Amino acid sequence: MSTRLPSEDALDLGRHPARVIMAVVWPSFLAALAAEFVFFALIDPAELPLLGFAGPLPRAVVYTAGFFAFWALCALSSALTLYFLDGAPRLVADAE
Image (tube, rainbow, N blue to C red; front, side, top):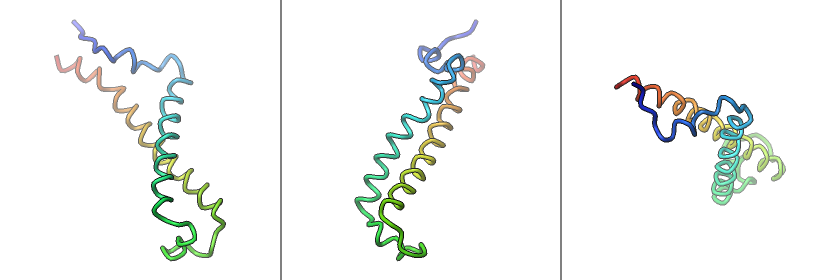
């Protein structure tokens, strides 16, 4: 007898690849926005050469590169969360 968790159907995104992509991309986009707001509220892009970066870069380039770097890190985090949650119902069912 297999015990189904209430959230097991919510984790079954395999039938809709677009839902899987959006389950990773959208939350990571929102988290990257928040991270960029906080990071650049505390650090001025004009001061980044003092932190070890070579040459003054235009602010727009630094903001853009920072956003995509934060987005990549947050997407990795979201993808790993989805990957580990996908195995959770099977592990609970196997334990019983």
